Length: 533
Ligand code: GLU
Image (cartoon, rainbow, N blue to C red; front, side, top):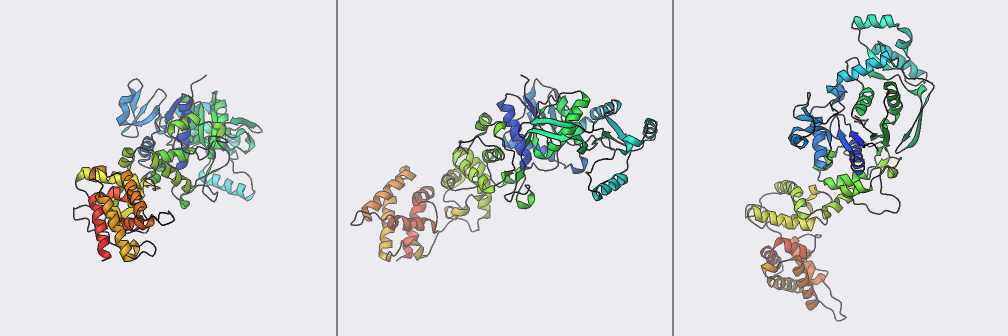
């Protein structure tokens, strides 16, 4: 069997759209699953939509998300990994290299190649020069609209301009385009890997411009030429390109090349089933990265926009490796895939719980730094808002906070927010918040004294969540068991938790006391006891 070769072919028109990333991800999964090659090429022939820096940012996003590719366009710093392949500096993008045997991998760098093919198509009678001016085309379109006809070129130049006239106009340097001559009255049929058999009648297919008057090819010509040059076996892309396939298949036929297989991925939809758009939320992968979604979660979520592991499978959390193992086109849906941010939040929350603490800490630290900067001053008397000193102390403390917070976080940008009491110099609250149900002041003081005794008796070295929980639970049993044998834990745990946090809601007192440490916990209990004198 021929080696699978797939390509991701983004246009540098801005940040990477979630839909584009899904294409890249399915490319990657399919290439890795089949032991094939994954190629990154750049489709930059649309100069009007070109955005400076977009190529670099596309590469960075793919890099960040960990989808490595084998060939094509890279940033310079990885050049050493390609000792055996051909590497050239990109002509048009400083800092970018192209590695592989099938380049150039950037369309603006192979204009001559496309032009040569366009001219060959003219010679072979599959394309023709068109000298129609924009005004005439506009007029034609309006008329077609008025008569409710499909908006396709009326073949004026094919029918009315003689070969002699063409030569004359070319000599006179008249602006021209080259159009494809679509054979009419034909049904083009192909098997899409997602959609099954697809048919198009060529009478509805426009005589597509292949070469524009500025000498640049259109997407259609460049795309087909590249995929052939790069020996691409499977073209995987969004559904919006489905209607281009008949043009592409005719080009393959006219050029005498074997076409690849096609897979057109379902549209991405907003919750209301309209096409996914910026108006209803962020659509750039970068936006999600910035907000503190983990790459593992983004990959997991995006993989499931249009794919599932099959009937009866309940697994929803997948590593990239698991996705490679499970992915197949049989389980890619035809129907639109709804982008549900709640699902992304849930998947992210699972991944925040799942990845190793050290790894999570590295990722969370920038968000803690920002959070600490947002905290109102004055900060603690120690000079920073943590009950510890030094960089190591800070790291250790934040890791503990994270250990507790990760169980409840949706995204990293939320760190600190719901647990501000970990970062306060003084917590001081109303007496009533400390009170459990209708406890008297005396009972309340007694309860805090009981907690104080428990905590005082745990040596610093044994200050673990488990020990705190065990000792406090034993104290509940000792002090707050009713005649009927029921233990009212709230009598001990509520006042303690409230004294430590001064919040209605927070993680358990075991977790909070563990993070705060012995000294700070006892200090907060003492402050609370002052209140009930
Ligand atoms: N440049 C196109 C895009 O960004 C790629 C289409 C294709 O894969 O053929 O959507």
